[in-house]
Amino acid sequence: MAREGGPLIVATAVCPSPPLLLRELTGGRDVAADLRKACEEAVGGLLAAAPDAIVVLGADERSARGVRGRIPLSAFGGPGERVPAAEALPTSLAVARRLLDDLGARVPVEMGTIAFGADPQETARRGREIAARPGRVGLLVVADAGARRGPRAPGHLDERTFAVDGAVRAALASGDTGALLALDPGLCAELLIGGRSALQAMAHALAGRPAAGPRLLYADDPFGVLYLVALWPGERP
Amino acid sequence: MMRLRGRGFGEHESLVMAIVNRTPDSFYDKGATWDDGPAFERVRRVVAEGADIVDIGGIKAAPGEEIGADEEKRRVVDFVAAVRAEFPDLVISVDTWRASVGRAVCEAGADLLNDAWGGYDPGLAEVAAEFGAALVCTHTAGVTPRTRPHRVRYGDVVADAVSSTVALAERAVALGVDPASVLIDPAHDFAKNTWHSLELTRRLDEMTATGWPVLVSLSNKDFVGETLDLPVGERLTGTLAATAVCAWHGARVYRVHEVAQTRQVLDMVASIRGVRPPARTVRGLA
Image (tube, rainbow over all chains, first blue to last red; front, side):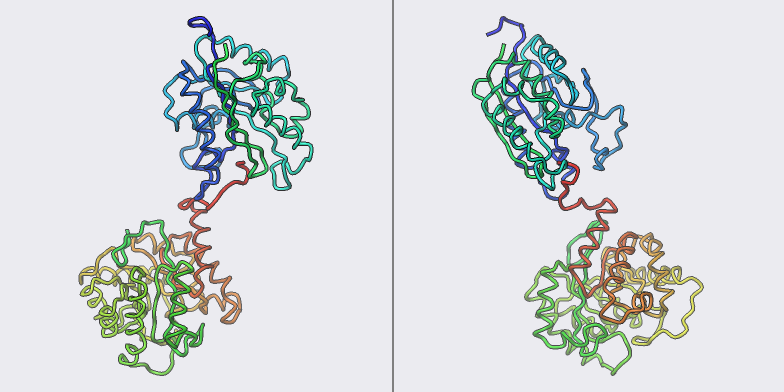
């Protein structure tokens, strides 16, 4: 146990950020019901660990801290009033916001982004920052795996993705932070693995040590993008 | 709110009314459902395809052999009763201008009287009131049933259609018909040339703006055929184009031969209007 009041990551969850997790955007049929359920289980696991705060780290175009804003359904053509760009959450944080709202999270939530292309120095710095935050932290990492997994995939087919996605999947299933840190930024960028930097920052936040009792809650690519949902319970001082 | 057979329909719900002819000589199907067996098969098929209403008619609209009230009843009344028995929830409409026929079909279980000849028999609305049936009020400029338009002129065909159908609707309500169960129909091709029907389609929003639910009967009609220079049997695409425009303008009920295709058009237009979510959206959102 960490000393009283000291920094402590009480649990870590990983979710992807397809906009279709926002129920309003999937039309009459809920095409992402299973995925959403898995994400809710992961985030529910964070909340069940009684954190003082949820820290959300989402992958995005730019790195930012202390991000606030609203879920921009309108940006995707969805219903509701138009959200000005300056008030719109990035997609990864919008998905996180929705999951936390749907679960009725009452703890403070601190949201930030890390750039898709963040280099090893930046991911290490960001991870150490999160690890140093005082109090009991539930860490929610919003990170996507490859989007080039078939001819109908957003990024079409790149056969190389299966090995790299497979490594990410195995790392999340086994709690292997070292394997996350070993991901090659250039190759991940080519394969549209947008979550690489966020996952590496997460690995640094956990000080590169393996997780205890990791659970992979979802791993499938129904639309050509690999969605991985994981919950790493257990306190990580 | 529109009410048919005790059920309410919201302002963004559009209904498909499938035509079932009990005639040996209608222009489109040429007697295909003249016999009971094929007629019943058609009812079952259109219900399976998603029709909300069947419109049963015993006399074709065009001129032809004179059909008296007794023969008209012989063609439709027992059939209405049989359809009612098999489909307790289906809205059954009967296309007739005669009050005596209207009375007989209401007794047999009809819910809606489609007065396609614009109040030619003023007793029909009274029958609707008496039986709690719904009523379609159509614009036919007072012509005699089963006559073709000949050199018809209007100062403003849309204004004429609006004023006359609204007057018929208000009369029906005054006679006791439920105001939620009165529809108005500009009656494409009836007492109109093709230019008139095209203008009514183009300006259908002026009819929907009255607040009365609007029924349109466009299916395979001559105004489509003349516009595209196509014979009966090749007018579906044109019919569906006109259907889309009427749907955009907010028509509520579509009297058709082809149910499944119409339903697709109505769903597509409803989603374009933003009143129906697409069935399933993944593109760009995965």
